Image (cartoon, rainbow, N blue to C red):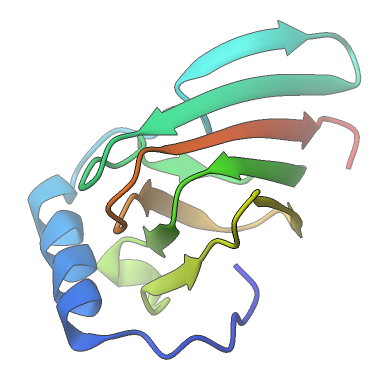
Length: 126
């Protein structure tokens, strides 16, 4: 994920590293928890994560738009062998939308105190 300008607090880094260690070896799943729609151009996913909960391990095979609608902070962590550093980003009130380029392998982890909810638009032709 893009640089957020947010310095990762030690307790969040530890939470993400613990999650990664506990889930090392997970199979790769979908980018969201529930597929809402699919055609030849897009897949639209829904993901809701309670505090401390993580997504399936997923690979960004295409470009994506993430409409993060609820929550206060979301983090991400990749398997150790990728060499990617854990990250987290606070969410503004009312949410935000970001674009994510294809290529990463990660778990999303709700490192906040509120339920996280997003709609994910996967661009299949990217």
